[in-house]
Length: 90
Image (tube, rainbow, N blue to C red; front, side, top):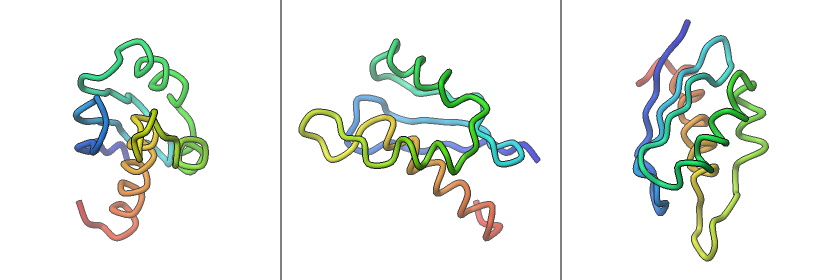
């Protein structure tokens, strides 16, 4: 099942991140606003990666003095999407 998710980012230059989960793999990551080159690079690097691996690699990354970063927000969004799938809630 291919399901699309969207997450409103907190404390980052990008506003939102959206992606699909397909058989436990992250697909079609899109960030709105932020640093276009860096975010396109992140999206390409995680394309097809197991969701749990995306979380493991990106969770906790900080940007400058901020408590989070765009990669961290993606990891948080993927974690929430996995939880939503497991519980059957949106």
